[in-house]
Image 1 (cartoon, helix red, strand yellow):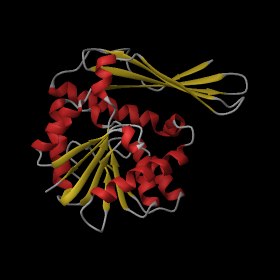
Image 2: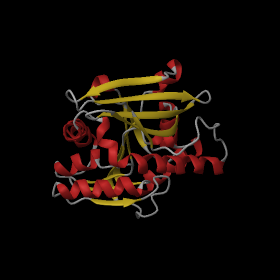
Image 3: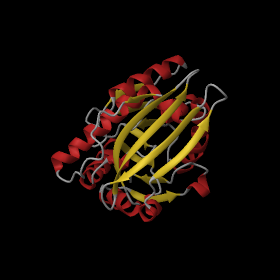
Image 4: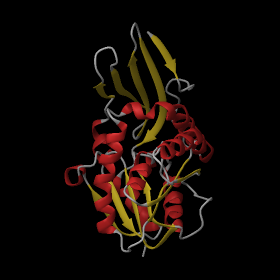
Length: 278
């Protein structure tokens, strides 16, 4: 068995608390997504099908909630383009940004392969400094991107979201159901088995809890070759971002009509939050 460790991190570091350490966590997240970019599609059974399925769920939610006809949508945690590409294929005017240069480069490549016009750029969601005020009708942040942030960063990020949205604009995001997970504190997720004989793929996660509400995710992607298995390993820190904390941050930033939509109601794989700019 050949093991490739893509994390370059020491096992289970101590929790980080200070402002400087919070910035270090962001740097760790950047490295996590840089290293994962080339393999990110492998966590899905069929990435293209997931792109289409997620867009088909999110599009009617946005259509019902948005209070205008034209729609310029920005995904500020675009990764390799899972949601941005799906929205573009549905006809939205889409742009995307991410902390990870490697992820942004892959998103741009994937969009170009599909003949889509999507503007991708590197930007930190905590300030979105590259974008003027009132740039977008819709701002999205999906796939549990927000729980990489400290409490102070969540507040600052909510303000940056508010700044770049136009009047009557819509914020939409998804995170894990941490209100439940903080009670159960799981140590393992998966495994998921994909593929056929001699080309199997196994995806699982190990969660190392380092304090009451933060943990390190060890993501393993095992790839079957003809005579051996490759095991890819990626690691990053998250914290349990509760719905009440994010709701309060959005209200403090000036959002209104904050609403949580659970998977049982939407069919999406994570809880979704929506909020309006007045």
